[in-house]
Image 1 (tube, helix red, strand yellow):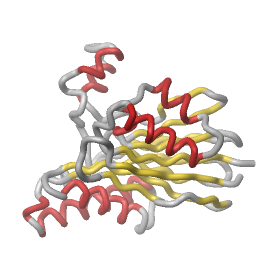
Image 2 (cartoon, helix red, strand yellow):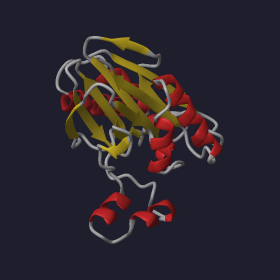
Image 3 (spheres, one colour):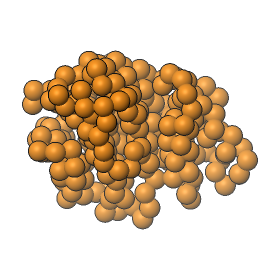
Image 4 (cartoon, rainbow, N blue to C red):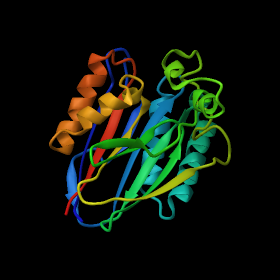
Length: 235
């Protein structure tokens, strides 16, 4: 199957800089295996931007399984922070997908950047957020409708740069022709509920979907940087 994709990023309407990073940064298509990744940095000054860029640089350049690549990025971020005290405490999420032309997609994730699958018009979140509210939801302490206004909604429980080793979640999906994959930072899903993401994601092309979603997130308030990649499986 041919793999076709588009990517886009925007600082939003509130933030003065963009601490997200993603790969690839341009649209394209391929009949070979393709790697995709989004990262959402955090830290004082420009440290969040450094952490997310470092994560993308490492996971797209080293060899190995996705958890090994993510662990290498974690170590690189920690090393950079040790070398420069101004970067102390920086970290980042990472969600990456390796898509094979046979339709197999392997996803590695740390943090709350998400991967979704749109199949036959229905949207499903593949990843599980590493956040306090996701844990509360799983344990039944809160309801889904409580998340948007919960005081701990932005607190993540796992990120790169926080400890010497990091636990990486992995997921494997089998895609078919016509399926559409979405990777995004939480600047998208914090602004738009899944039913709205589903609607905009059904745009005619990946490029249309990317920029329709970014514009919708900004129109809803644009409180955060937003970055996303839309991947189509062709025939």
